[in-house]
Length: 390
Image 1 (cartoon, helix red, strand yellow):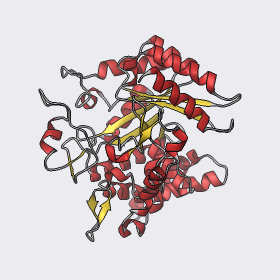
Image 2 (tube, rainbow, N blue to C red):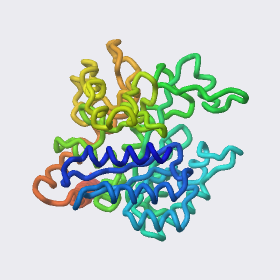
Image 3 (tube, one colour):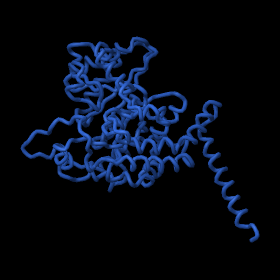
Image 4 (tube, rainbow, N blue to C red):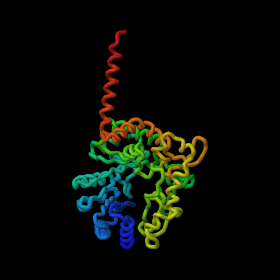
């Protein structure tokens, strides 16, 4: 990103938050953002401090694969209270299945070193674990690795769904960039097929259920899993993640040249809003095109979804994954629907219980005592049955 674009973005972003009470979130992701070098980010923070209003709060976030992190990077993150999203897909075997360097060598050791340096400096970190064909069948192994081996406390599980068409499927399965002598094709959200690497809906549901069943008995209030948090929020009528909100449109993507797109999953020509060097960020964000994009999520829901008992928690999921048909033959059903249903229905009772605890100003972690008492009661009933005379 050119300095000119960076400076314009930061100035316009802060100007868009026209009240000192509004927190500004400055987010960086890629590609791999650390490739641009630490001086770029040091200058970015200097500019934000210059542009921001008195008493205005700023939250810095960065998403990284962690391979370039060292003491200098992590001291900088700590000094400026960065929230770091670290991409790691579980233990070595699972992580290295797809996260490899150009030479084919896995990146686990470098990422693990990055985690260690982040921990050494006390940086706030969210683990970003993508779920795919190589790890989705091993939920508890992954969860316990993050919780017990790494000591991680904030986890996000991100299902990988790579859409493709019959024409692009062979290339996609081989790897989008593996075309010697050819340019990498533009990836677009089109087609109703998925790659061999993609997670299956039933896999996703089973993964979430398995992790939830351990978490809800042992780790509530100690480990925070994003989808569990947002599901609890939905039971209270609160939506903090665009995927499950009724409408979307707040997660736009700014490219290195100043081009702004409606969503970081739709960086393609049909969703181009304009360039911040030609039109202001506020003008582009509030444009009719962007408002229509966000509203379309709700308006395009098929009747099957509108009548679903877990619509309040799901809201159809992300539009990029709505490419299969409903049982009655209508377009627009989310590819992950079966997994979402399995998970949201499975957690309904404990989520309602935790929502009640919050409404009573009690910690949701009390649900673990409830589970313990339920288990104890079942064990005592079973003992009584065993002891009955024949």
